[in-house]
Image 1 (cartoon, rainbow, N blue to C red):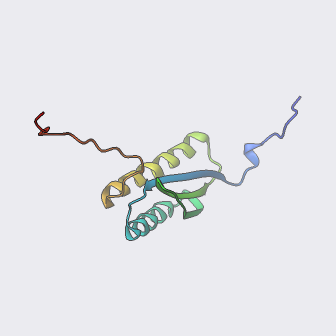
Image 2 (image 1 turned 60 degrees about the vertical axis):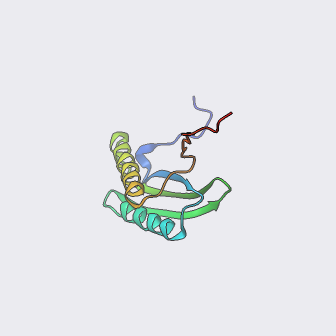
Image 3 (image 1 turned 90 degrees about the vertical axis):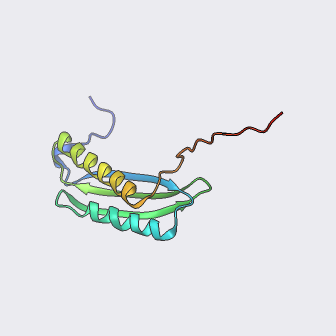
Length: 116
């Protein structure tokens, strides 16, 4: 006996995948647009039926891009392959255009400490 809603995956017409990307708050607006345009191109592929993507928040620590996309209700392995492909393509794009994820750390070393 089931006492909650039962989700019959075989009746679904689409599977939803979510995106949440936090980039450095110091990213220039032109770079943000370039990143958004690049992600939209990545999401325009035969395996993806529809998508939404927007810069949704500006916080003191990050610029937040959120979105979702929809695939056919294929088996979970194929769905995860699509998600992985999208994520890796976004990482490559970020590297290519020079956009860093928020929270990236920088190490500072003191080379010549002052004499005591």
